[in-house]
Image (cartoon, rainbow, N blue to C red):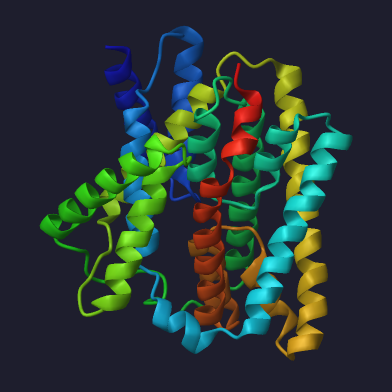
Length: 341
């Protein structure tokens, strides 16, 4: 019964958030709905199996826009090296800030410094016997901050909204039979990876299987229906709300401060790296900065379209960044074991 109540509350909150038309409103609405309701009804809960569903849906949605052939055609080795240097620097600087100034544990600091992929972070923290609310809170603050920033930029550049939007979404969605087949394959492969201790295995398998199919058979469409994505985002918001249950006002203030500082540090690193590699690669500083900032794929690509800053290039960089972040859990087993009882 608590699971059903939590599910309904998250969906209702997500629906209200979606109707407000604010960035990631479905996630914020669900998070607030679960958080507020949890104060009055503390027995709210989600089964861990629901995380598996979210992983598969999001993994397929990312895999559907990955085409390995396009990577080789549109990106140079220099750009890839720059992206890797930028991501590595973001993690290192964020890690040292959280450990030295905020006194977080090493595992918390590492997960908190990872530049993006909230869904994968939720799964990785859930793998710990003592899930960290601070990590989830920090990533939520980062996501909200960058989405609001993207919305402000879009608000002041409405005149250029006639740019083509097909870069953001595919018109057609995949057939339910095809999605069901991919989901079953991802579930089976993910269970095997789970047995050998790889965190967030279902995001990884769903993404790789879909990306492989999309690269091999590009004539088919693998895009997940928007309704499924909206429900998944609402459920992520519900999980975030559950993780924030019981935290004090002081803990909230500390987590907000940490989230804002890590976000600002990441953006600062992005600007420095973009400046350096814009000189080395003779690519626009603005394009590289927008390509490497740790924001969401959709919002950063939308801003690129609005500003006329090579949206295809920006989108491809963010796809690679997300791919690397979703692959990251496979190498983090030892890090995640630190917080186990």
